[in-house]
Image 1 (cartoon, rainbow, N blue to C red):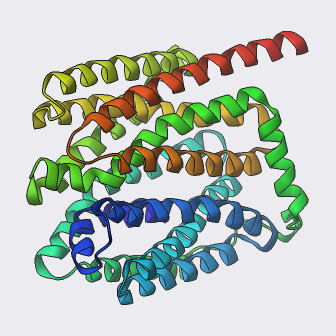
Image 2: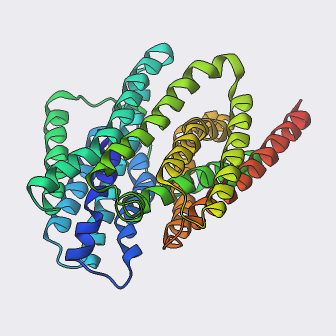
Image 3: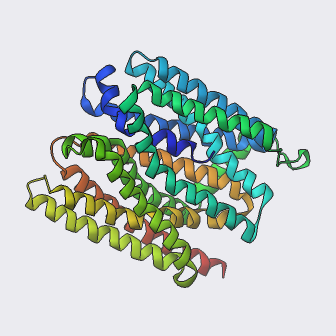
Length: 388
């Protein structure tokens, strides 16, 4: 269920060119909004389904979100212009957010300590597999049918999960543990996060790190299939790059107890900047069009630190808010998603006939994320000194 958002994003990538042909827009880069608007819907949904599940129960929130998601799939299937398509994608993101947010709450309801770690390890293994497999599934559907069948496939995927969930999963939040849904609860979490300077800066660091990745997702189909003319091999190269993030997440889980989050995070941020500088130099030397092997190698190397940093920055941002960890997590993830959309759109929309936007965007994001992290560490030490 938590992979629903990843599946809905990545399975569409090989079809963006086909959709652009059937639902033409004024600019080729407008197709990127099919990915971007899904993330925007998810950002809005995270602030809705989490508090609703705390008030009315996990099952009600999951089923309601699923209904919105499937309605969005139907809208996209029947769309005859890009505006209706984007409405459908927004609904898909809005609904998929329930599966992403509420299932984490259900895990917290049922498990703790080592048990919770084991469950999350299984979930992360799914997250590694889905980005690797989803584009290939989308490409296979395109070989035998049209892009509309991809939406049929994810509609069936969501429906099967909901039937299984309805039959097999009991409610995990008892009536005695439910809290009223009020604007004060949500606004209080927003104020707590925004007033904590270290949390705000760690969140900003995650925005810059994830913003580049959102930009990459938005124009990856254009980059591989049109700029480098890889054709149907796009799914293979996308899977290779997804594997780098999976490797990084696994390595992070092994190294974090030995080196700690801060040492790993600082090393990752410095590595991002070094990799970005090297790629920018190579891009300039090749007139904005480096060989495919260089671009693929850069993305693989750049995504390795990203796989560690997004987890660590999220954890560091939430750490001071143990009393309201659930709502703080929802607020932080919403802010990260919205902020990364702004950066991702800027990078993706600048993509035309060279890789200068990709190289410059990577370097800018790496420098800004390192700066935000250093300021966050300084604020944390300052707060510790004041309270100690």
